[in-house]
Amino acid sequence: MRVVLLYPEVYDMARFREQRKEFPPFGVLYLAAVIEQAGHEVAIEKVTPHRTRLDLSGFDAVGFSLASSATYGIMLNARRRSAIREDALVMVGGVHCNFYPDSSLRDFDAHVAADGESEETILAILEHYRAGLASVPGILYRDGDQVRRTAKRPLLRNIDSLPLPARHLLPRQDIVITDRLAGTDLAMAHVMFSRGCPFPCSFCAAGQTRIQYRGGASALAELEHLIEVYGIEGFAIVDDNFIVARQKVGDICDHIAHLGLRWSALSRVDTVDEVLLAKMARSGCIEIKYGMESGSEQLLKAMRKNTTRAQITRAIHMTNDVGIAAKVFVIHGFPGENTETTEETVSLLSELGAAVSRVSLFRFVPLPGTEVYDRADLYGVRGTHLQPDWDGDWEKFHIHHNTKRWWGNDREWEEIERTHDRLRQFVEAGWNTQG
Image (tube, rainbow, N blue to C red; front, side, top):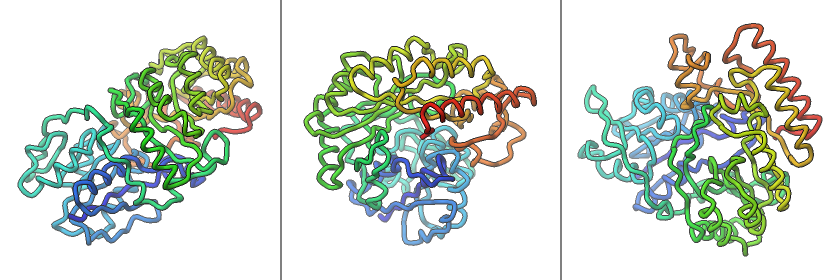
């Protein structure tokens, strides 16, 4: 069977104005790998705002990866404008589909939607779709005019069993990047060593709440492959929250330390300790990106982040002490933000000073699939597709340089604009970057 998987260019949902590449589409790369392993022929096609009319008539099955809500409209255009055979199987999956599978199935006029982890699911779909999909767990499918949902598919017990992502199906320049690793120019690639995040932050669209880790041997095998094939000097771990289970992280560090690679990862401030940080430093870690979010404990509670200024301060200084740079992410404009909460963020950043190597400042966006989005009325948020005044504009949910007004009256919005300018100027003066 000939299968094609379509994905949106990631910078379209993030820094689409700058056309800055982020990381490759791991969802479709893993799907492509298992499809190839099963003996099918597979191709990957990129969709951008200027590339939505594709000739897909040579494929027996077409899969649309709905990797973000911000690119949902772009992918819909590709579905409507591309040439697809009438007898071809049309599938949808990905992050947006996991949150809203029924509407994704209908909007794309698809035969089947994958709901959740999809490597086993897509193989079962390809095997059974002609005979009927009722026996395939983890999907929604069309049965005449009806939409049927099957039993949920359990998560893979061992993600080490998956083949390496099919990077060979993408151009080399989409895999190896030289300006993304902690401000260095090292040739680096992106990797995923875990899946999921168990924490309940109300602003975060984590599609899976149970975390799965790969073992150290599996991580080592992938990095050795990337060194041999791509000549990498470093890597960035793009997991939602890599540092959760200390023993699992330590196992990976033990296995890869001898490679001499430099690397970075994301973490919460309350899941690190001195022993683990020292082990990470010895294995080549040069930067940890922490979700600080705010210096206001009132807002941190409202976000369900449930961390404190003291924990933020301790994590940053512990990281510095072992020789790892500490970058922080800050969100401004969460419902309830005001002059006082902004000044608390400014004061915490001032106290941390040079202990923070870089700052990325984002404006609040109610991302589809988050608690803030799905319970918009509770948070006073406007503009979601679940509300009666929905304008049909999915692109507005991009996360960079977003100036849309999501909540508040005129006075509150004026305060948000003014305090954001205050915080932005402070960050630019102190760190000269928001990247």
